[in-house]
Every structure is written in C-alpha cells, then in structure tokens.
Length: 194
Ligand code: GDP
Image (cartoon, rainbow, N blue to C red; front, side):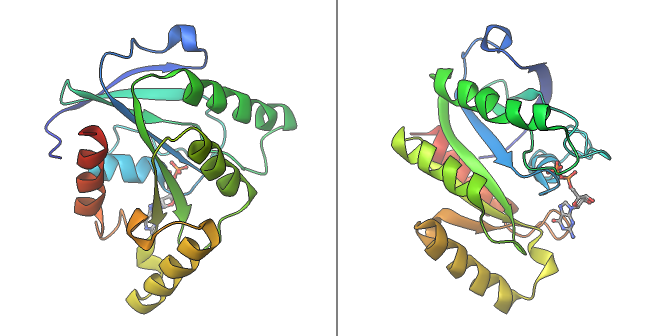
C-alpha cells in the first residue's frame, strides 16, 4: 500500500469512545520501548505523527489514526514496562482484550518484538488469543540494525520456531535504516484487501 495521508483522530480507552468502525483497521502491539512509534512514523513518513515517549509505559490509551481516508491504524498501548504501577499494568490486558473483541473492522494485528529479545509470556498469550479468534497476526522484529544480517536471519528463524509460525509471517524492520518498510507496507496492503 502507498500512504499519502495520515492524521491522528483520537485517543480512547473505552469502546464507547472508539471511532465508528467505518474503515478497515490494523492494530500495532508490542512491549514498551519496542520501537512502535518509530515504526508507525516510518510507515507514514512523518517524524512525529506518533509521539515517541520519553517516559515509556505512561500512555495507556489506544490511539486511532486515519490513513488515506480509507483505513485506520491503531496504536495499542505498550505493555510490560517495569516502572508503571501494578494497577496500570493490570489494566492493559482487559483494555486491549476489549478493543480486540469489539472491532468488527479489525483486519489484523502487527506484533512488534525487539530483535534482540525472545518472545515472552505476553507475546505467546497475544498470539494464542489472536489465533483462537482467527485474527491474522504478523510479527515485526524491530531494531534489526542492531544485529548483523546473518544474526537477523538466525533470530528470525528462532522466533518463528518459538512462536510456531511461518518465517514468511515475520518481517525484519529498522526505523533507522528503513529496512523492511516496503515489506510491512506490502503486508498491510494484503491484510486490508482481505
Ligand atoms: P515505543 O515505546 O514502542 O513507541 O518505542 P519508540 O519508537 O519510542 O522507540 C524506543 C527507543 O528505541 C527510542 O530511543 C528509539 O530511538 C529507539 N528505536 C526505535 N526504533 C529503532 C530502530 O529501528 N533502530 C534503533 N537502533 N533504535 C530504534
């Protein structure tokens, strides 16, 4: 897909405040600091459509963006930041689960994992949850520039094996070098056309 236009619509926590599901949407999920804001900004070719947070884990809102007046991108709050209170951490699961359950226009979820880390409990649980509901999931290994090409391929194969998914469902991405930008856009185009 080609992104010509991107604008922030609103932030929301409760389904009653979500925008009407008038366009197909894709959601972006991942641990705090995984590079989610940087990924979305790279896709839309903007420096700060999504604010990269200096205090990770503080924003616990779901952010909706209108793309080309045709699609929505949905930025889910990052999870797993150690310094947020237990209460905030406990809110993440139900809020995201509610979001994922109620959107009839949800075409798929991009799950971001830092290429230097192995998938953990949250990623396994989210993948399982999506599979149970037949919501397509695409894995994006972020900050690929931190590893050599050789190590990137090894990590890709290891992640596929751990998550039990196909290597084709995993994309290597770097906001710094823009590696993988075209592949992510292509996969988004496929998700939106289904
Ligand atoms: P978010 O909390 O998931 O939205 O993560 P951010 O996009 O704010 O990024 C967190 C940190 O990782 C920031 O310091 C970014 O500059 C850095 N970062 C994000 N993407 C990349 C990348 O592709 N390569 C490198 N080397 N650093 C990145």
